Image (tube, rainbow, N blue to C red):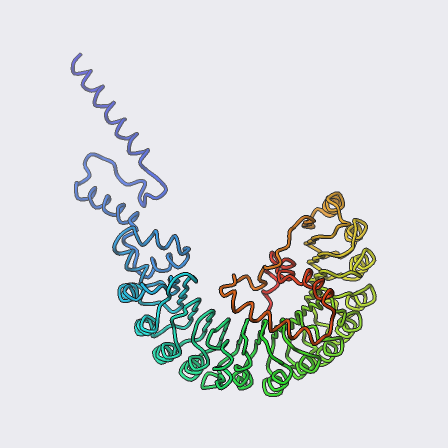
Length: 536
């Protein structure tokens, strides 16, 4: 009896072992049918366990694989990964190419340790707030000694930097390709050092340089073309009181493709004539709040490759200048016009655009009183038109929307803001524009939520956005960058007001214009249509 009980226990234990071994087999087991017999050697079992350990151990990944994983993570996730272990800490630092730092004066003591860890940085952003003391020349030069392969540099509110510091920096970082600086204190001498030493410089963005703003000093200093003139492809100038000191640089940049001028005082007609006479390869031009007449605008007709043109709040430009550009720039794809309610650009100018620009894909009209006449011509001749925005127009009503619905077969996105349309205009969109995928309606008092709901129900595939109660901020900045120097901004505004006085408009009329000239008209129209810029 005892012998029988012993046999029973032995069989039970064997069945239990087999059940455990069966449950331990997973899809990751490289040999699920390996022998489980009691006779297997201890060496074989230990070898298998070591294999499974290595198979699931991330530490066996080579550094290059970990680096590839880190590059797919966000900045915050990378920081968290660097805290896992010493190896990850080192690999994350050695493979980080982009770095953003608070550029306060205390940073100078941390530069050696920071860039000993992040020794592969090629894109650096140095930002300081207005209330703090920024880094000085010593810190910038020290950074340049550690980051000699730097290709991009962004400086914001670094007011302790001087021309001398920027010059010494440019001698160490000769591979620099992009420089963006705003609210800094250096001037033309520092910029000349950069264009002389950085032979590969392709993009230059300058905003509110204090050294440039001082007219007494800047009048005798200009930014020369320098050695980088042949490589420069992008120049952007914003809120500069004496921006025309960059004229020689712009004129001498033979390979320039993009030119953007925002709120820069002075007469720009002569500069634009010289630029377009010598730089014929311009593809994109942005002009906003400039003292520019039809003479300067018509000078762009020499740029036969022009594809993107923004003419915003230039009250002296009229149909004549716009038609001249359209007649010669037949590759134009994107056109933004802010007529600033002056009615100097209207149906006549748009009809000229429709005649000569068959490749037009995007059209934004702000404060332009267009009617069915010009819209029908645009729809008939510009059959590639996919994106259309009509903002602040007193003449765009239900008839104009019906015309768009009937004629614009290729239209995909439509934005209507502050126009006298009603629900009847939206009803026309239910059966027109077969390729339409998105409609945005803002501040159109005649449009109700019932009309928008009806349109959604009629075309289920159409995204309809209705906003009738949005409060528009008069101080919004269209480029999305918060103003960092109110004093400089007010100085530019005074200069622009002096420019606007040349149009001899009455004081009350100017006040009325101010109510509709908020800078965020374009950004409101296309804030969520970021895909518009994809083809530029």
